Image 1 (tube, rainbow, N blue to C red):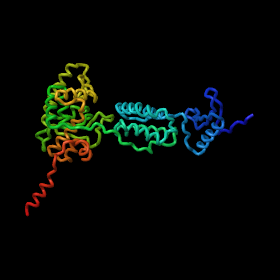
Image 2: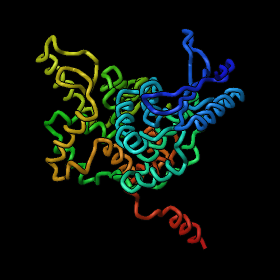
Image 3: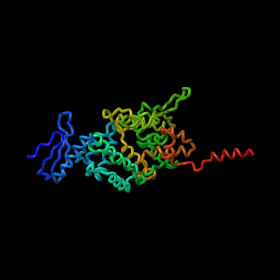
Image 4: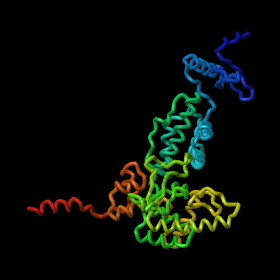
Amino acid sequence: MASRRSRGDGGLHWDDARQRWIATITTGYTPAGKRITRKASGRTKTEAQQKLKALVRDLDDGLPSEDQLYTVAHAVRDFLTYGLPRRGQATVEKLTILANKHVIASLGARKLRELTADDVDRWLATKAKTLSTRTLRDLHSILRRSVERAQKRDKVRRNVVLLCDIPEGRAGRPSKSLTFDQAEALLTAAEFTSMRAYIVVSLLTGARTEEMRALTWSHVDLVGQPAANPPIPPHMMVWRSVRVDGDTKTPKSRRSLALPQRCVDALHAHQRKQAFARKLAGVRWIDNDLVFSSAVGGELDAANVRRAFRRVLRRTGLDPEDWTPRELRHSFVSLLSDSGMEIEKISRLVGHNGTSVTERVYRHQLRPIVQHGAEAMDAIFSRT
């Protein structure tokens, strides 16, 4: 009769249902006292014994015993469920869609302990043929953070995703800016529409779409203090956004902006329209103090604004599918640059930390020739 294994050496038994030898070892206990086990299997008893010895050796060396059945899909779903605290609902939905469509669909069935850097490289290279570089960065981040979480929980020993670089993907749709004539056409088309004030204020102040949707009347002063010293003009305080914490994108984004007269006029008219809408809604009105709201005072989401904005675009002759509300901000920067304003001043107006992003991303209409140097040299050498 075979002798019993010593305590801590694990166990070995034949599984009739699977027709395989099963090696089992206890690696610890849960707070409730339930055993935590790791298993491995082999077609022959010798193969199973070798796997059992490896499990025991890792346990003696203090190394985590990898979960033999844990897949990439398990790791990604665990990350999506527990690894995104304090993230907005929109962010979670976006990452979940990307994970299901691209990560789990392509790599989900792979055992996590068998995933190699070559697997990840090939996967990213395939995705680079159809996706933008930005999307590839998101996919790489999802997989990296999922494996990292699994590694911390002893599901796998190392994170092979850290060994992989992100390839260059397809070029995304570049942002554009309106020309002066196009901007005037848009402002004219917005007259007598529900989007008039939103478009006028966005285009003439450069506020972000998430800042516009969070703007409250308590942060708008349409009169100012002309008798003050120095005088305080009509202005709006861009201190909030629709982000999860309600704060602006960066500390520099928290700013107060003087309102051009065209914005003041549009907001006065908008205030009267909103008062009429409140009266119509009656008890259904939601008092959020929002400047831009739904017909009953509720918050607008990005899709609401995008649809209404494109309805106005159809009246200008521009293709609605080619433009989004955020390009009003791009147009603000480009039109100011085209008028000759210094890039440092524009950067402060749009709430950037420096001029780099303003210069590289937002400024589309550059003055054709920088003349300062030539004019200065002409003045210097004209003396001789």
